[in-house]
Image (cartoon, rainbow, N blue to C red; front, side, top):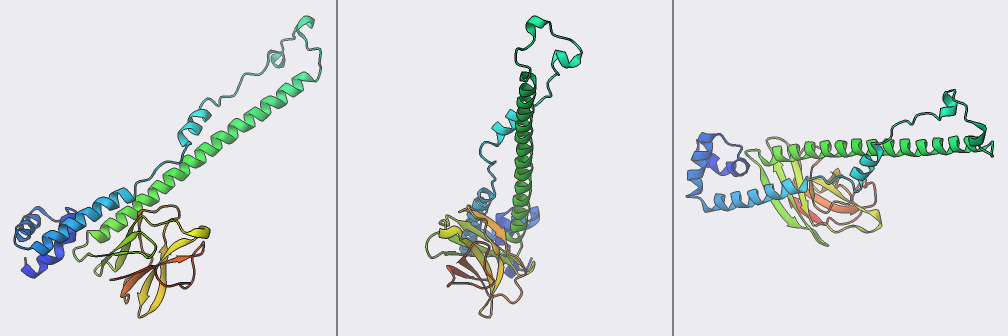
Length: 249
């Protein structure tokens, strides 16, 4: 392998993406290259944070609602409804009472059915959220494992940090962010590609998650930096304020 190429393999080595032969050769290179050794340590720390960033916590109370819906089994009809006539001594003195009982049973059944449907919906939503998180993690990991992966970290005005991971070979970039403060008035953090001073939207960060990661929408071609701004709920067509951070690609 060309010695000059070894310096580009820090990202792949940090994520154990090299073959055994390449890994052995790069390990020998690390013993003689303090710069690469330092970069590998930093990339491994970033990869560990990334793994924590994509962890998904089930919605609070989901298990209790699911367990409560399990006993939802249709009851047997009353004896009188199956042809057995109650003796006079046991007949109700209030003729309208059976109708009230039936109405109460129907109401209870409707509530139980609603709980079961809600539990199933939340379980389906949790699975969908987990699947999306896994897809995002795989996409971000692919960029971080690229042989030419470059990492740029910076602090955001107002608090928190962001790391931009980019690969010119893949034409993709991702952002790994930590400890972002909650924005007032339901604001959101928005990502941008900076192309010659023009900001092009590259997606929104998930609301309510101070730490996480995401793949930027679009390709890196022509972009020289990635910006982060605070925008109104739903995002903006163009930045409404100066970037909180502008990280070079």
